[in-house]
Length: 341
Image (cartoon, rainbow, N blue to C red):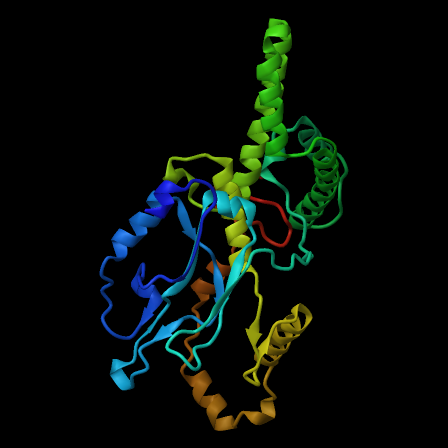
């Protein structure tokens, strides 16, 4: 009722005493009474859940055995206006200790440490004449090596030159919705004082900038935007921010069962874990009878299987695999999205 009376930004946080789905519960009955109703209620009020990390559940009935139940009753929701003010907001669930509830905290402005990421070509620049020229000129110089090696080096040169152009373009022109909105309002006020040709030129320029914005944020949202019947850039923007907050690792539990929150120490924990996991075993540690037993149960491939595996890929196979990919999917280590190809 309060949400219907007061407009503006809203934050709902605390013990909601209602679950959305069985994913927020462990133990007891899987059916969630009023779960669908609650989900529809949040949608009708433009509320979306704020991502939390830490303990998976915030409440327990403190019983034993098969009667023990855990639930995530304590959550936070914000409407579109609130999430536009605090797009990076995230929370933390603390362990349940003295009570049947565990405390939660909300950080509206978490530390925004810059992360080093490899550059990736961006979809908004594909139709630019400068990008087409860079791509065409890259094929003029011949390169030594196999066709795959030459292609890889060519793509690397294209990416480097495109990166320089894109960064300069964004710096000089900017991709800013607020700026476009201001220009639209200004043009509406002064349209009657301009000639038809001047108004047409301004509209064309704004249409071009708006299209760039749309492609720019759609690529970053990585959500099924078409299912919503909505192409709102504010939706893309919130999707990007929510995904970034969810993907950020704020803490990790070490082998000593201690929570690590420092970013440098978190990286070291990951490095140490995978070094131990991927380090080859000392052959001396494997008994010969165990090794013989393992290899005796391994099937070997036949000659015709081997020939098929070693057969070179045809151009048609390469083309089909390439064009079957979704254009804006995350690129591989080379930073070239499928849409560019």
